[in-house]
Length: 212
Image 1 (tube, rainbow, N blue to C red):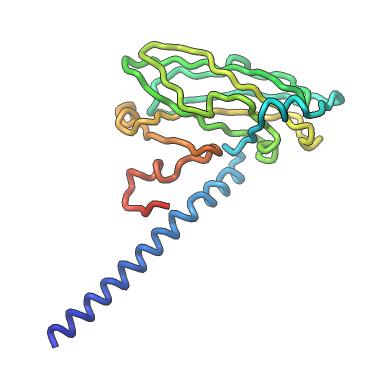
Image 2: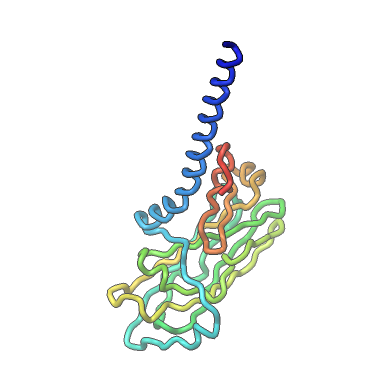
C-alpha cells in the first residue's frame, strides 16, 4: 500500500508540474499580444516602419499637403544620460526623405550602453512613418562625459490618411545593463529587431518564466 500511495502521489505531482509548465508557457506567449494592445490603447507604438534608401527615393511625393512632425525624447531612470531632440518640430512633405537629429550625453563617470525605443502617435500613423536610418537600430555606447548627435533619416508615407496632419515621434532610452541600470534606480531593457520591448529581458527579475 505504501508503494502504491507513493506512486499515486508522484503521478499527481507530475501532473501538477506539467500543468504549471503549460500555463507559464501560455503566459509568456500572450505577453507580446498584450504589449501590442497596450500600444494601441495608449497611442504608443514602437513598431514604426522601416525602409531602404531606394524605396524611399522612389516614393512619389504629395506636394499638396504638409504634415507636422514633432520630436520628443526622454531617458529611463536607470540611464544617467542627457537626451533630447535638436528640433522640436518640422514641416514634412509626404513622400520626401527628411533628416532629424537627437543629442545624447553621458553624465556619469562610467561607460554605458543604451538602447532607444521609438513610439509614434497617433497609433494609426506608426506604419506610415518609415525610417531609413536611425540610432534606434542598434545600441549606443557613450564613454564618461561623452556626447554625440544621433541621426534619423525618415519618410512619411504619402498614403497617410489625409485627416492626420500631425505626427509625434518619441524615443525612450533605456540602459541595457541590468547591474548598471539598478545602480541608477531603474531596470535594463532591450528591444527586438522590430522594436518590440524584449519581454523576457524586462521580466527577468520576476522569475520563473519559461523561454519562449
